[in-house]
Image (tube, rainbow, N blue to C red):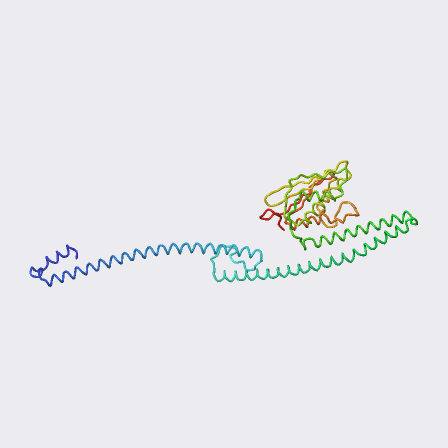
Amino acid sequence: MHSLLKRQLKKSLPAYLSENKDMQKFLDAVEMSYQNYDEKLSMIQRATTISSEELFHANRELTKEAQRQKKILASLELAMESLNSNLSSEDQFGSGAKKEFDVEKLAQHISKLAAQVSEITEEKNILLKDLETQNDSLNNYVQMVSHDLKSPIRNVNALLSWIHDDNQNSLTDESKENIELASSNLVKMDNLINGILEHATIGTSMESRMNVDINLLLKEIESYVPLQENMTLEYGNDFPVIHIEKHLIEQIFAYLITNAIAATKHLKRGIITIKFEDDNQFWKFSVIDNGKGIPVRHQTSIFEMFKKLENNDSAAGVGLALAKKIVRLYQGSIELVSEENMGANFSFTLKKDSNGTTKP
């Protein structure tokens, strides 16, 4: 009991009661009740303090969660706007003025968009499967037709050669010229069929990759391309070793070098230069000549099938189209920089993978 209160109580009591043992017990009981009250009050105050701290932390966590949910809703809104623009949805959720989110509508809209994406994906897979089947059928057809055409063409060419040899003395000059013309056209047709077959099937049966030293490959190509005495093929010895299907990279270089030979054969000194550049993503090679060049009007179509600048019986007009298809297999590109009578620069790139090799 508070000391002042205890003194006031004793002053108000008669002397005989203030010293009475029973009264003293009563006063002690009152004092004990005050002590219990103080302890309980202290416990309540401590509990209130703890609850306030818990509420503060809980409120802070709820604020964080509300901000997180707000970000999620904003991301969903952006995602749905993107899907809507691609799927041309009639119900543009959240379009126009800013609206409050309806969770049920949001879920329904997401479900609708997911169903549309699933449907489009299924249609895409069906189309890809049909396309693969059609490509297989087309390749089989091309191979069959090529085989059926090549055999009679070669037979006719052989017969013409026999006729020419057996009747050489009795044939007129005009007849001999006609036989030679027919024979050259048969050779042209045979080359054309080979070109069509190669273009249609290239990339369908990729041979095993190997490390190809481009320096050695260029030397090999130089040994069989029709270089003339007035021509020089120049290249350094700093070309890389790349992991690739050898026959495909060889075809590209052979086509471009052969074209450069045809463009410089009329010169007193034709120069064909092969260069190499390296960067983080691509191998880049260039075949440059000082020949007749290619007019601007032909540069757009030069990489199309059956396009050629000269009426060369031995050429099928598919070489550059094949080169373009090959570099695309390796996620590269092929380009031409040329002016008429100023030479030509054919450059192509091959995509590297993470190990620095080519990547189909």
